[in-house]
Structure formats: structure tokens, C-alpha cells
Amino acid sequence: MTAYAELVCASNYSFLRGASQPEKLIRAALELNYSGLGLCDRNSVAGVVRALGALEDSARAEDDFAARAKTFKLLAGARLAFVDGAPDIAAYSRNRAGWGQLCRLLTLGKRRAKKGECALRLDDLLADAGDLLLIVLPTRAFDILEDAIARLLAASCSVWLGANMPRGGADRRRLLRLREIARKQGVKLLAQNDALYACAEDRELQDVLTCVREHMTLAQAGRQLESNAERHLKSPREMARLFADAPEAIEETQRFLTRAQFHLRELSDEPVPAGLTPQAWLEELVRRALLQRYPDGAPQKVRDLLVQELALIKKLDYAPYFLTIHDIVAFARDKEILCQGRGSAANSAVCYVLGITAVDPVENDLLFARFISAARQEPPDIDVDF
Image (cartoon, rainbow, N blue to C red; front, side):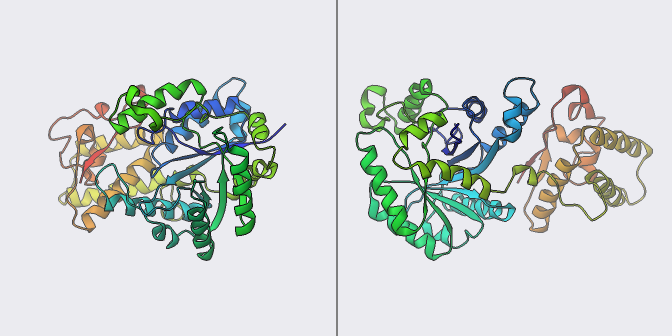
């Protein structure tokens, strides 16, 4: 059986471009018996958490796909679209340092542009990409393609040349040209389908999204729309058939998977002092902050409430989340950035003592269960305005 992983796939977090939710893409990839999926939304990593959640849910389910989900590899990346004419590049993290590089790059591009947009140049990527794996996506301008690859290689980047078969009439000639460019530049050719949706039936939705993006009707759209319904997740057998002239491009998808070692779960653990668990560190921070909130001694009612809250936080394993919010607020205060917690978090004595919120829940007789309850079976939502 042919092994295949789709490494250039957009979800509906590629706003008005991708037509399928991350959960649907994961399910379709498992049904197709993929070895992995690379989710790379346009200048964004917003969809990867939902994709990971869907994969973990599938692994816990008692169905035919649970075993596949346990060995399935999800790559979290972003499709970098540049404003200087460079071809799009699908970027994935080799390791945790690479994830930091990718997030800093996206932050740079979004800070330059108005809300909802991103202004990146190829030089921005070249400045810091040592731990990224980069798939240069094909364009019709082969000279631009070769120039971008040469510049990336000169900067010691890890580079692949992507190739797809969109069934546009000249696919085989185009594939041979891409294969020659890869050989000339000394990079590997990698098969991909540049997927925008999970199945062919979603093409109509993708057409509507294109029309919304371009401010026109379906009747007016013409060539703004995709020429066919081929940008869906295809079976490994179909991909092998399409790439019969370059079977090594299919095989390269598996080698790429082994190079990408970063897993989103590496971000789950909040850094804590050696020898302490997240819960123990949270309790220590609360103890220290209590002395600052109540220099003359905390009322017994406050202490009792803290004991109850911390016990529930421990039971539900929410300590890392509280530590993350605490770190963000502490950083903002250190930089003199005005911030204030609000909403249901104001019902929490822990949030108040840590300085995340400014409303004393004891003095105002607020109900903690409105913020966290074991019966709700969902994590708390701490809203902080900056």
C-alpha cells in the first residue's frame, strides 16, 4: 500500500479560502489512511489546536479509526504568503525552537499590517529560519521559483520544492519542469495537492467563500473560481497515480514527516521551578501574592475560598492554564502595559490574589461556580483586556 501524507492543506482558518473545518480534515485524512497531515493556514496557525483536539478525540474513540489516529502525525505549520512577489512557502517546525521562529515571523508580519492582514517579505524568513522546514510552492513563473530556492539555500535553509497535479491540461509537462528545477537546485521534490477542502463536495462552498472574498457574485466570478473540484484530500493510491512520472515525490512525504519532530503538546507544560509540579508552583505563587493583597493578614473566609478553588483546580488539572495567564499578566505589568481581567474570572479568589482581576470576590459575594465547575466539563475562560 502506498504511504502518503498531505503536507499542504488549508482549513477554514485560512479566512475565505479554506472550506473545511480542521476537525473534518482530520477525519477525512484518517478515512483515507494517511500517515500524516500538514495543516498550514495562510499566514496563521489558528487552526492547529482544533486539529490536534480532533486527532486526540479520534485516538480515544472506540471505532475503526482509533488505531490509525494513534500513529497519525499532525504537523502544525503556516502557509507564508509574501508581499514582495516571492512564491508561497509552507513552513513547519523542525523542533520547538522552530515553532518560536514561525510564531515570531507571523507576529512581525501582522504587526506591520492592518488587522486581518500580514505583510511578510522573503528577507524576513531568511533572517531566522534555521529550525524550519520549508516547502516552496509552485508558481507559473519558474524563474521566480528558482530565485527563491537559491536564496533560501544560500541562507542554509532546509528546502523542498512542492509539486501538485491540478488537472489543468499541462500537468505532466509542468511536473517534469518542476522535477528538473529540483534536480538543478539540489532539493527534493515533494508531492502535495494544495488542498482547500476535505472532499470534492465542498468545492461549492469554497466557490462561495471566494466570491465573498472578491466581493462578487457566482455569476460574475469567472476565472476567480477554481477550474475544477480537485483541491480536496485524495487517496494515497490516486496521488501515486498522478505522480507516476515522479514516484520519489510521494516517497518524500514520508521522509519529510520524520524530519518534523515538533509536537504541539510540547507547549502544554508551563515552565515551573525544578522539583515542583504546576499545581505546587501555582499554590506557592498564591501564597506569596496573598501577603501582598492582604499585608495585615487575609480573612479566614478568603483562605477557605482559596483552599476550595485550588482543590478544584488540582482535580481538573487547570494549573498550567492559570500559570500561563499569570505569566502574561506579569509580563504586561512589567512592561507597563495596562491590563485588566474581566468577566466570570472576577468570581475567582485565585485570580484576584494573583492580580489577574481587581474585584474581591469575597467582599462582593461572587459565585466561584460561575467561573469553574466540575459539572460543566469545560475549561475556564479568563478574559484579560490589554
